Amino acid sequence: MLGLEVPAMNRPHSCAETSLAPPLWPDQPVLARVWRGRHVESQHRGAWVLVDASGAVIDGVGDWNHPVFPRSATKSLQALPLLESGAAERFQFTDDEVALTLASHHAEEIHVRRVHGMLARLGLGVQHLKCGPQTPVDADARRALLIRGEKPTPVHNNCSGKHTGFLALAAHMGVDLASYLDPNCASQQAVRRAVEEMSGALPGELDVATDGCSAPTFYLPLARLATALARVANPSGLPDPRRRACERMTRAAAAFPDLVGSTKHSLCSDLLRASGGRLFPKLGTEAVYVVGIRGADRGLAVKIDDGGYRAMNAVVVDLLVRFGFLGRHEAAGLDEWRAGGIKNWAGLDIGRLEVTA
Image 1 (cartoon, rainbow, N blue to C red):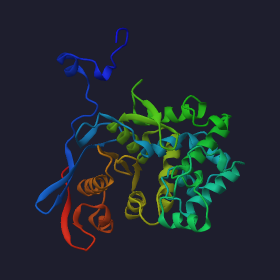
Image 2 (cartoon, rainbow, N blue to C red; image 1 turned 90 degrees about the vertical axis):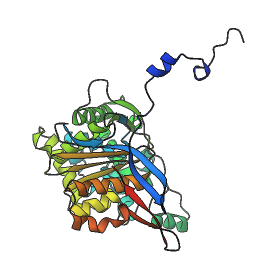
Image 3 (cartoon, rainbow, N blue to C red; image 1 turned 90 degrees about the horizontal axis):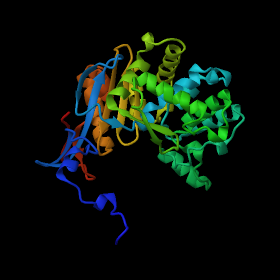
Image 4 (spheres, rainbow, N blue to C red; image 1 turned 180 degrees about the vertical axis):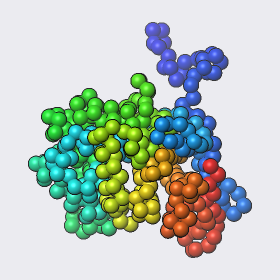
């Protein structure tokens, strides 16, 4: 074995090296527990933070300074250059289409039809979308494809609205459309600057990886994410045209909640409907959730460490009610997302989901 290097993972190390190595993930508190009978069966750890638009922390639990990948929770930030640059105006994007650029949609007909229309107006087709084909989230849409003997295309990807917005921005800026997802191209650099400026990220603090839809995704502290959405929802202190861009996004989401998620089963769409658009919510894959509270100078961000949505949904709704951002009468229609009793397939009460945050 002379001359061969021992792999780092197998190489002996001292106690000092071990103690100095940063943890891969902080030891976060338990935010939710699942009980079966009298015993805890599962628990979900994570962090949440409530901030104002200056970035000052109002309240929180866990290490909110630890970076996370917000994934789709940053879609409103990624859409800012589309509106600020004049690209949305040039290509005549209507408010319903702006809502779709913010969406993690379920590929219902109302979503797919609009993406096709936006692409056609750009003089482009499905082949220009680099998000990849995805089976529709909506069960009826999946069934319809199967009956027609068709396969999913990139238009059915939940991020196809965002990607169509990216293409419009790239076309407007003269970027090679084949490279519209390159982190170093001019349009994606504009997106990165928007994320940095809105989140207050320090130089070198924002890391980048590749999202499930092949777009750049950002690694930033949970508190920075909450700050960014507090600013989107409360943009009065921002310069034009950013203020107007934020106002148009929140107005579009409020007017077209079905386009942001689904007509049937989406916490984002349900929160928009329940609050009349006062809440500006967005889900991110792996159980990240962020809500900008319009008119309240607040942003709330939640991350469940294990990526569990059942805990995320319950924690988000519980916190919105706890802080008075969601009235109890408004929350009454959100029972499917809340903590409470658990029934089995026979309808028997067998346990409960409890928020402990």
